[in-house]
Structures are given as structure tokens and as C-alpha cells.
Length: 132
Picture: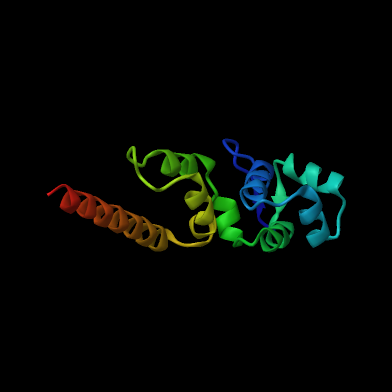
């Protein structure tokens, strides 16, 4: 049994942040796990959770076990604040793609950003052509 512990970002905190990013309540998670809201609150304060329980939690959250373990809030915040001024990319479009950031390997994340970059370049081209 592998126990996950990350001192810089405790597993319970990851569960809480993913839950909130997904727009789920503690009651929603509790219903999926057949536990009380109070038990979910306790999970969200945990430093250690065994992989079997984490797998159940990941399924209820709609993410992979690896996605849950490797979730990094700083990466999502960094990605959501590093778009140039005037971009049509906003917090809601970032949140719409959170599951892609959580569930997909690095290649998929790169593919997502290349797609966003291509879209922004096309918009710039359109704007430049309008000025001409």
C-alpha cells in the first residue's frame, strides 16, 4: 500500500482544490463515497491517504489517480495569469480545461497550449488585417 504525502502540498488540500475547481460540494463527494460531509472535511485536512481510498476519491472527482497525486495549484494559477492583456482567454476558459490539465499527460497539455496559442495568433492576424 503506497501512502501519498507531499509536505509542500498535502493530499487533502489537493482534494479540496480539485473539488472546488470542479464545482462540487463536500456533500457531493460524500454522496459519491458514501460518507458524511464531516468525513469529507476530515479527508481534506489529511496529510496521508492510502492509494485505495485515493482511487475512490479520484473517481468521484472525475480525475485519474495520477492526476490527483500530481495536481499542482501553482501550475494552474501560473497558466491562468500568463496570457497577454486583451486575450480572450479568461478564468472560465481555464476552468473549463482544468480536467484536461489534471487528467492528461504532458503531451496533451502541450497540445492544449499550442491550440490556444494558434487561436490567439489567428485573432491577432485578423486584427492586423482589419487595420490595413
